[in-house]
Image (cartoon, rainbow, N blue to C red; front, top):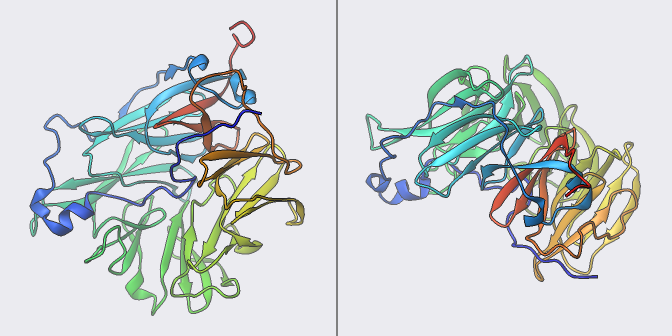
Length: 405
């Protein structure tokens, strides 16, 4: 069997939390370059299909080759909600954000300065998917201030903003903080905005020692002593609270990787060893000894990874299989009956059959083209696939020309 290698990059959900040039402004605020004069920050609806991809130019898992594959023009790993994906292209003199539906339709495009990579997806109390994009503008007390605007993810309608925030993202979702003398929002007290209105929903200063961890789908997660608490961002009502999994330090607890919007599963850790998988819909504990989690919806198997071990869990949490690898793995994703991880030392890809946990090779060994590695799946099976520095979209649309190529 031919060994396949691919460029190493951050795995699913570990994309850098970033915003409008905090590293640059800390050293010299005036050094932040002026945005291009013809920048168009307001989203522009599109409605056209993205450009189709010639499948002879990319090596995809064989099951994906029956679907239409398009190139929305992304270079960043997309975020996904309700079958819609949002990511950006940073290869020009500006960021070009592109929202695409899982059928390959480009919903809208918007531009931001290259220094503004902060974006998030959430929802309001009615379940409407909302995209938020960061921006910069001249400030009264300094050269620049960071602002945030909210848009309907499907229609591009402006819902609120621009709203000033104290600094870049400091946690998943609409969590922000003044970076102080440390980059990437690691400094001052955090605040959370409401995705529905852009108004402050909770401030860390009001938690009497608790810490804000994340905002996800209109739900705020914070610690209170040794408990994890979930609040509704819309009205501040408590949804649930549960004890932090045993051994986690309340002062260092954090969400590790991405919160899966299709399952509400997340890994909670503190940076000292593996964490635990929680279902954020009710706070229940699904598994311990976890660094990453994803669910294959075709087989309804939850895949949990930590160190050299990848496990498949049944819906009731029982272990169905276990793969122990000779090298520590970086978990990437799971979907379409397959789970993907990388061996960072040798730069090779490990693919597991989610039904049995055995290693498989789902790529055509005779195709000499860059390898496509799925990073993000929708509930219906669409997938954002990394191919070198680009991200393609494997749509939910069957290719009628399959078999006649």
